[in-house]
Image 1 (spheres, rainbow, N blue to C red):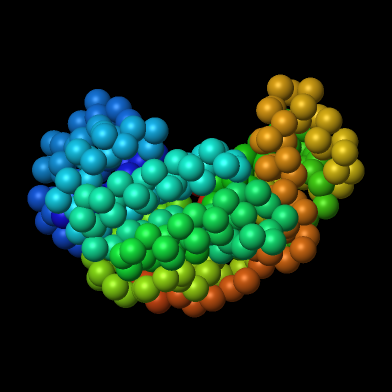
Image 2: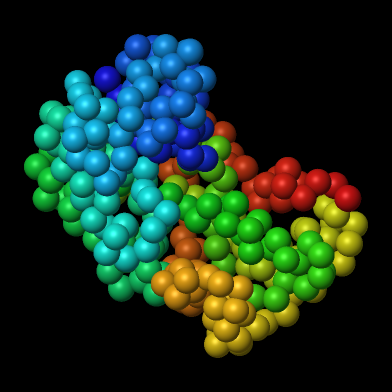
Length: 287
């Protein structure tokens, strides 16, 4: 029995879909906060049980009989994120899972300038001492995040963001397919994987002409001072911890933390990963 958490989220949902291409549905279970949102999976024969990272008892039930558990990381920063991940990992071990997998990040490091990557590093430390074999999926930076940062530019034509650096923006679909391949081939990676990344690292200056070509409208990349960017986010009501988290994307990118390239993702999915131009074409349309 392979259990996937967060199976109604973007990455978890696609991972389950790809996993069902590889293993029988009766071998797949999901742990979700709201089982009602996973009725489509139950209809396909997947075991659906309620389980949230704040509820160890619920996780015990959701993880019952698991041989592998994929812990999909939470959308939180700092101590809360690490605490929730610890709860899920400990529940998986207690349930008898012989391997725990976790969606980490290519930039995971205690010295990262991006809080989420420090959180991933702390979670990997928990995995190392959890008592069972583990796999940390060192995922490339989600391409959807770049699209979100580009959002305001769709109206203004100005990509007004702090100074950045090259990032291997990687599609959720490719990372989900890689996760499914690793789950279906237990033990393929023991410990952290190589960086699971797209084949090119791009800056927002590189994305501007791509967006222009796809929409038929001009886009200009302008650099916003860090403090001004923080102030803009604060004025928009973004909580302070998330302001620093978002700022960390840029400070880490310009330090080269997200520029590594590796063939591991291509090898796992058996084809070239989706390029950022295709992601933008899908999200922005052709004009």
